[in-house]
Image 1 (cartoon, rainbow, N blue to C red):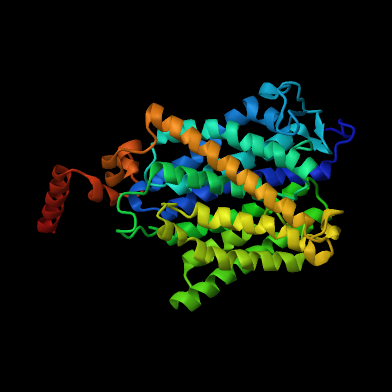
Image 2: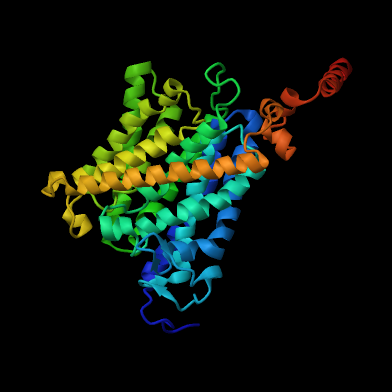
Length: 439
């Protein structure tokens, strides 16, 4: 038994908190798989879930080999990217510290952010992407899009945090604006699903959606609370702000639904909660409780309308990555310029707390730069993959369902009846008739 801390400078309380938060954030990607899986039709449930699960494996390998050092290595090129000193996590031992926690733990915590950001993009291209192309895209996108943006915002020498002075506590730009702009690029590149705006494409399992949303909400406490990098008052404030915004986001969405459609839906409750949680992600460490309540409410109200923009403008953002994550991410990041308080930030204040308009300008610059960069580079990556191996699934696979066509599986036994051959249908019917006559 160890009787003393073998690593001078290590804070065991902060380390324990970050260990728990890392596990919570990793749970968010399987939760996202359930959330997305419930929102698609029965013929592509497993494919949707697999796109999240394979992201865990692919992003982990890329991050450990090169992603971490490029994102958090010593600054190179004026705040644009990190150096290559820690390729393959070289030079990092159990005794290495980042602040008061082990560097290996810090790297693992940041890895979970990279994983879910990549997985979130899959919702924009549900039901119509080649699985192999998605695997390649995830690896390349992580290195060329996520890693640079993470360095700009999260690394001490990144230009957005150190030179521009924008605030982003837990990833409004790095995660939400980034995945939303990237999802829009791929949705435009691949084109709409067959039958888009002509056929009803409703969620096949609302209980699955709500289960996924609930687990996402649970994991979000690690996402935002862990970003304080310690078991301290800032983590507690971030956690409480997260809860508050998730609740007002849910209520705001339901209010719009009730007034507009006459019904408050379970899908609306799940979507509203996620919108509020997305919006508070960048701001949970910068605003007070009143600010968190307003930010969550604004996200729920606006996103309830934003999800219909895809029908108006003709882009098929299948599971509303743009309408929820991009829009709510922009709202939460921009409203820091109004609601930031020095009591939370230790310095910068927003307009409503005597800080003027300067912080709002910095927040808007960060949003625009990240959105434009993510969209442009993602479109380029997707275009290259499409040219080399094809990104869009064949039409017959899409119509038949990607579960059977790609994975040779179905999520539900009765799904076989909907996708089998005529001979299979005849065999099943004959078997049923024989059982009936015997009875």
